[in-house]
Length: 84
Image (cartoon, rainbow, N blue to C red; front, side, top):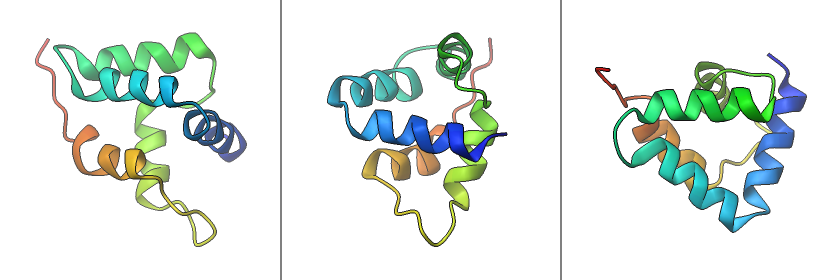
């Protein structure tokens, strides 16, 4: 996993409200949430998996202050389980 890729992704999401909404929809709305989020990261070529993203959010380091959206992911996103 590239911490640089994760930080670039964070910066892009935090700078773009449309992208924030897209991420919320992928992670929290409708069926197959996890699959859609994994596909999104792969298609965008971010260079990390959804699990790596969650691992980073759980322990981002002292220099990183998580955004409200990221805190939502930590609380709700990783506990998403699609049965399909």
